[in-house]
Length: 174
Image 1 (tube, rainbow, N blue to C red):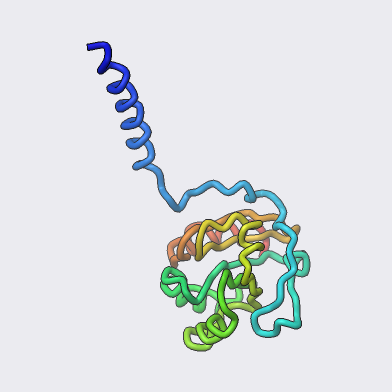
Image 2: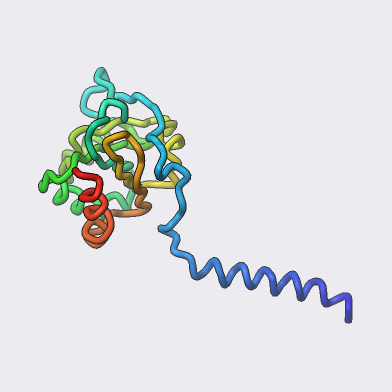
């Protein structure tokens, strides 16, 4: 009888962890970068690889960074939302094209519209790693000092814009 007690106890503990895990929201993955400066990187822009852009170039304004790729199905879902949002001009929207081929990315933007003021090309994915990107799409809100104030995992929805992102941008004084 005692021989079965330890496996039963281990099973119950694992069952408890499973129960807790099932209640968690997978979009609420804590980021160690929230409330920290955007990591330093300098990347070529998608439109003109001879031109480079870095987060330091954007200091002094509130801005959003959307990590996307032409091969990303969820990016296609969020893209119309970003195109409409960009038309409002409420805050500059920059892109980070992640682990993508330049011709594919340019074709994708031509086909579906380009909401970005500029999009940086991260073909090796190193800037994405520095940003703690789990997968695409991910969107960051950055304040005037270059500090990440919010990270949204998954497609940006109209509800996420209305309820979370835009109120935060308003507080940051965009």
